Image (cartoon, rainbow, N blue to C red; front, top):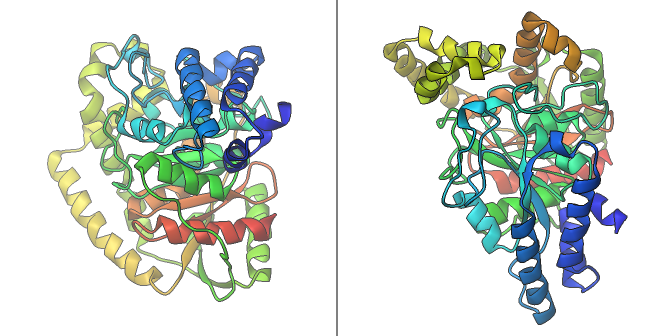
Length: 442
């Protein structure tokens, strides 16, 4: 049973379909592992054992009757603690929301349940999802799977840890500026940031609804495809026969490589060599207008985030970690006119991006230009926290600003990732490219 915890979600689903694994035994194995793990309280905010066992029992009956609901029917996954779960506290990593118990499931959770997925519980996260580092001294900071002294990446920190530590077959997270892809990269996982609007946000505690997206953190690109289908109640992308031969990738230069550290640069270079060897054509170029879009981030993200949470924040600011509180309050400096003008400018820049990237199958960037920093220094040095957080989010934010899906893959060097950026609502093509890239990188 121990090996089940390191299998991909897709492999677990196939084994259930063949009758080799019983969903009840599988779920019990994950729940036992959660209870026994010394870091469980740093990874899971709360387990949902009763729900998980009931869902597993139903999946077991369906499997025996040949009535499975999807390829992942009976597979246990974790959920970031901003997805509403009926009757179970959903607090989004914030003391401001302590004791918040929704009456219904988030829509994506309902869809996943309808596909037979088993809900293991809710994972810890950055306060209200507003940091890419994963540090949360107000509730809990999950460990990094490669080095417990380093930050796990955020804001879907517990989602990544639950998978990397073998405490879930996959984790469901959210991504506003990099919150799926950074923890995925820093814990050597696959992470999919979906196009804004692809998956429903009903029942998801918001940060910046204009940019908020839902996506999986998992072991393989196939898992990402299967989970996307489950989350939206659709059919998974067909990955058979995916190849890099004849593909053209834009290797984005300038802003994506500014101040990049040696390890992420080496991992990215290694990945590029593998993609080229597999038949891809790589073209190095820049999109100068992207710098203008990056400059709009402070207005667009902080203004909406503060507008969303101002009442709760100002009613009890002492309940927040000061660096996160400061990030939210920065949104008060911008006027409504600033916000509207920034959005008009961004929409124009998205058209420029679409034109400049139209001749390519995908755009390639290092997922994060830095390695996860040491937690102790982040806690003791607020200036360092701010600088490393902005650097970690810089490359991932490109996809959010441009409104495109993005897929991060491990490069083979620990804690480094390569990201493929696709076209809006083009997740199926992106996943096919990712499947081929994954084989090249193996």
